Amino acid sequence: MALALPPGGRLVACDRDPRPLALAREYWAKAGVADKIEERLGAASESLEALLADPAQHNSYDFAFIDADKKGYRAYYEQLLRLVRPGGVIAVDNVLWYGRVAHPEEADKNTAALQELNDFLLKDERVAFSLVPVGDGMALCTKR
Image (tube, rainbow, N blue to C red):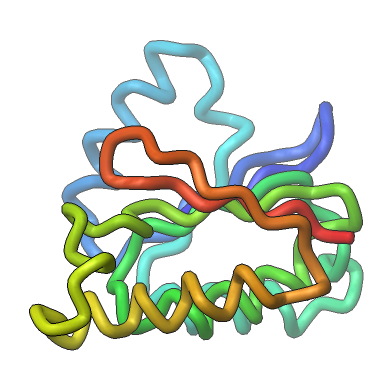
């Protein structure tokens, strides 16, 4: 999961596994942007709650990207709506889930969670919702 602030701001990278962060750290250094990235190791919900504990963080991020445990997507989305500014975008990865979301009879817990999220996002009047059918599907939610 990642959040981005306006120019001069920072990127907040959240992951529960230290290995991807270590790999990413190498590339951030090569790109010369390591000083602009704040790492948060731990559960995404806890990282987001820590950000939400500071009212100055509310409505201050331009962009958020969700690619985490699928059953937690809806909760992360709700947290991120409080952090992303009006006009900001929340991108949600894997919303087509290998095409399984179109087959309710085959739904495991992850598929069911993504089906419910897609249904919810389509009706959520707090955002303008677009589904981009590229790869495994990406939902783009622009906060109103």
